[in-house]
Length: 176
Image 1 (cartoon, rainbow, N blue to C red):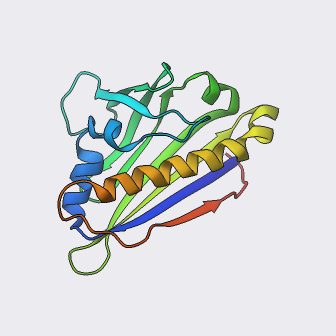
Image 2 (tube, rainbow, N blue to C red):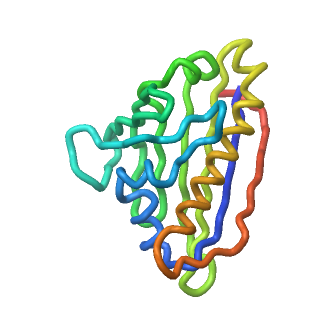
Image 3 (cartoon, rainbow, N blue to C red):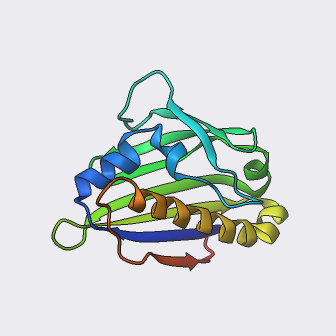
């Protein structure tokens, strides 16, 4: 079964600028993803393994979390300035108990003159009874963390003006 979580924001800056800020600099993840307590830790640091930015398909990213755990993400697609997709090469204990994998996709699209729309979607592939029972609760917390992250991206730097953020929690269940 899969739970899909989505967050969306409009940013009054061009797509290439927003993509570079949000996806092109791995270290920026710690600035933007602050988590959602008590279930979703923030990112303390992030670094590509064996290469400099920008990531490419196949790159691994080591991510240290604010709760002392760590994960490793695998870049599946990096198509500047439109798409950044990754999944989990290594998960922390909570993730391993609740899901078999998590696949993330960030889409960057023009939205009016000089503006961008960023849509971030996570497909959380549930594992066992624990995933089915606790997955929806964790997904709601994760969605809030995702929206906070996008709001942080939208608010960084001088002159960053944003329209109100739009959040959609889509609890569709399907097959893996």
